[in-house]
Image (cartoon, rainbow, N blue to C red):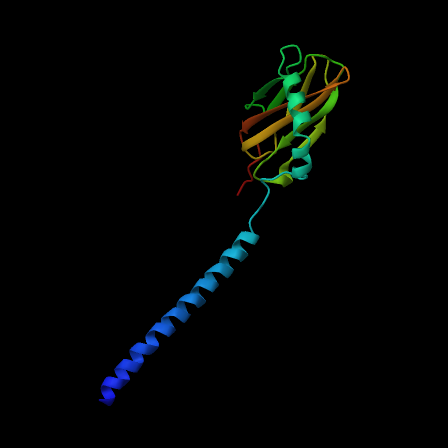
Length: 163
């Protein structure tokens, strides 16, 4: 009878031990998940994301103005020489061109627009990693602001190191 009692008491202890082991394992998985998620790169969101969201209506008006044929900016990408050419409808403009890298905020670049005699502005893509970029152009012409944005897939133009 004592042998029967020992087997019964061992079986009775198996459930609480199994439940406790499962809970400990579950808590450890949660801790690992929390640590891993806190270490993730969050570059997919722009700086001042909420402030830009509040000014969304103004941005939509700028975009609508920029879509008319008389104010449209023309974008050409020559991947063989790594040159991005923006052609504007007028010489008398001021503004900025931003290359935004959704996957890596540290690579974002912004530059003031300086047109040449052909109403063109050139941006070199040498040194930029290939992949998805967003070109954002904000300019002012005749006291009106315009905005153009488009996605570009750039060829990798970085110099390869010799091994």
